[in-house]
Amino acid sequence: MASLKAHQYSESFIEEQNKTDIKENQEFQELIKYLEKFQNYKDQVLLSIVIPVYNEEKTIKKVLESLPNHNLVEIIVVDDHSTDNSLDEIEKIWNRKKIILLKHKRNTGYGNALLTGIKYSKGRVIITMDADGQHNPSDILSLAKPVFEGEADISVGSRYLGSYNYKLPLSTRLGEVFIEKLLQILFRKKIMNNQSGYRAFDRKIISIFKEIDFQDFAFTTEFLLQAALKNYEIKEYPIALTNRKYGTSKIILRKLLLSLITCFSIYSIKKLKSFHTRKLELKGHYPIRKPFFLDHPIEEEIIIPFLIITLIIT
Image (cartoon, rainbow, N blue to C red):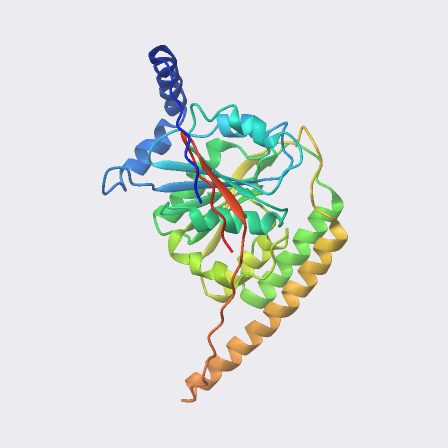
């Protein structure tokens, strides 16, 4: 069942918002001009920006206000059942931002929130970014451009190639080094900032998300492992990160560590199986491969600006 609600605004209000849109698009003039080169038809969405949100009332409005407002770009916000005023903050800018809001009926985890947003995206290139204000929108073009031009299937924003203005916890750096070395050993991929949530990827790779098992913060690692297993090109590009001003990280280190150990164990076995299968194929033996199916039943409410739609998926 869907409920629709339309909003009406005065001519003066619309005129004022048009001026605001022009000012915002001037800030992203280079990005919009670049995207227009790939436009094949009217109303085509070329870039999807997916933002998972869980209790980010202090930052989400400012993050959304800082993003481009253009027909070639869609902004998808997935609220993972926030218990603070995050939704109220998002509603404050519905009147001038083309935002698609998807609301989970229960808290399902960072990775699952991203999966929901990716599922509803339409862009040729999809960007994921966090809602805590650490990611700079001016880096969108730097991440999207290599994917559009075929230089990479996945571009990962790296603070180590760029900059960051805060002290990095030792546990975070050690964890990333550990994952970096395992990626090098298993897949010959060197990704230093492998836990970065600021990424861009080609739409052609989204089939890999059907095989994602980890829906918490280990999602970022499994995403890379799954892509590496499928031989997609993964590259890092510099970004500028700022310190988180409000709230604290939602990551529970013990839980994340357990998930990562399990994740790498699974993909180590998958890699060995893949290597063994490849050897058999070279020898002329072709083992039968069983199809793999994985479904993610999600309950969600979809809210589109000017039209409010409720959809339950079972």
